[in-house]
Image 1 (spheres, rainbow, N blue to C red):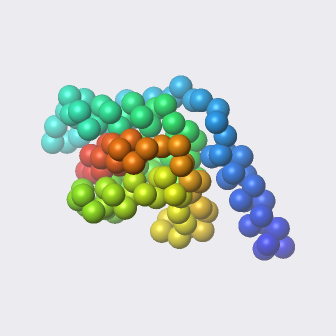
Image 2: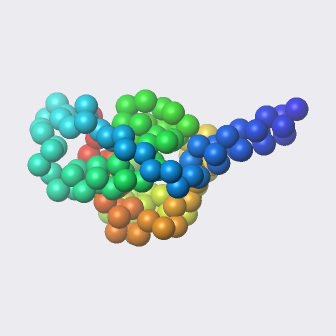
Length: 129
């Protein structure tokens, strides 16, 4: 029974995150400001927001709410904004991953360039409270 549920969960995840369907949902309009500053003029914020909006990321992630994967704010709280973490998280976007946030794997995104993945991560890390 457990294997059946795991298999069913994996199938649902693949269906939700693996499609090439384009979603036109804004990634973070409500999160444009933080307590300390307005991020809308930050080039890392703007570029990352644009790239995430064009990708399938919003199928599994939201800014403030956990969906299939963690919220972007939860990721920002977990990782410091360092070059090492940016490179590591960009690698997870490209190669996929599993185990840090639970047993559901993140679908790999090999079509995303390293520079674009790093821009996405920089945006996400800017959402730290």
